[in-house]
View 1 (cartoon, one colour):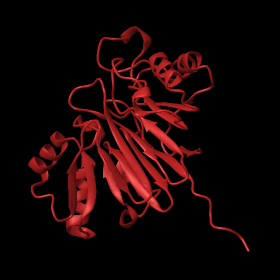
View 2 (view 1 turned 30 degrees about the horizontal axis):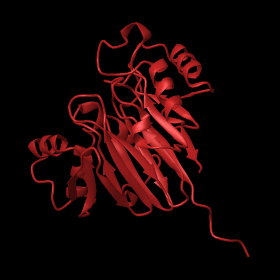
View 3 (view 1 turned 45 degrees about the horizontal axis):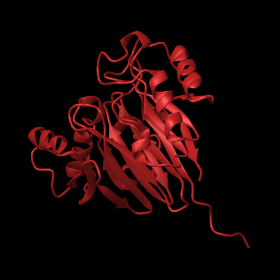
View 4 (view 1 turned 135 degrees about the vertical axis):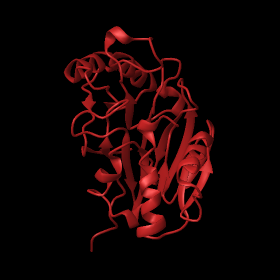
Length: 252
């Protein structure tokens, strides 16, 4: 007789372009799953369409939105319309900084009862089924929250959201099986805005002791091969470059 299926924490990339999507791409969004639980982590433009290639909308358990810049959240608006009018459901949990809720309400009107929206801040912790999530405020305006996600197996991943170099992945705690870190900038743009170069992402992940690094949120026009090489050199191990629909398993 076979035993119970092993719990696996998995990350699927729904979009990974920074600021705006390149041709055929999508902005920031990820599907995090473990033990039958599915969380949509950031909902940038294009990610709702890609989400449906990996998950029936009725099977989504929660949405987490890291900040109010539109490349990270606006697809929650058509999703809200879908479950309000076309595929009715109520009480779908959404977690975000307050400014995101304010903007969503301004555009779509009443969010309840379809969505059950909860404000979170740095230091907040929430549970969605078998997944535990904790938040850390990054070096980015407006209020932006990095996220650590852990599951019942003890596996964990850390997502930087958007940040400048004044914050580090170390703030998410030790033993990250995978770090998903923004690497928006070309090297010559370092410190001009509150984002990271690939080398800075690699340095941050190495300092945090992450076992694996995936860089994401590259702005269109930034050389992906150079970014991967710069991140690998700083991290000290080969680095993956996020790509739409790529899937990563995270183990303890």
